[in-house]
Image (cartoon, rainbow, N blue to C red; front, side, top):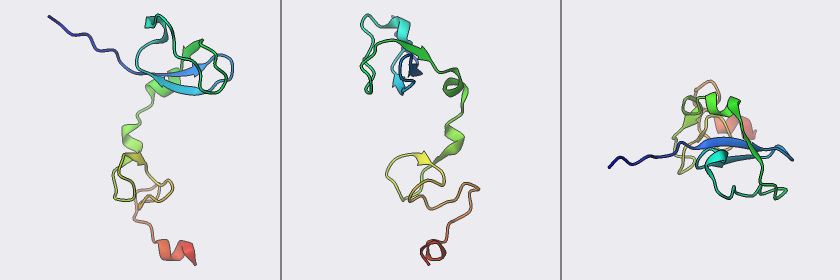
Length: 91
């Protein structure tokens, strides 16, 4: 027996344009999830987010215990990939 797994879809609300990652395509739901901002249940697939490669922007340094965007917040690296010097930033 073959098990079919749905691919997650990045979607946007048609009313307020809020983003949400749904477990499968919005057409494959009997009752689509509600938008967290406005409560609307109409979604469209965000093609730009679906084509984007998020793995190349990911960082796994010790600043956070999860994968995060390189150069953001407490990340130890800047956007170029060089190690940050936090003493210069604080001064």
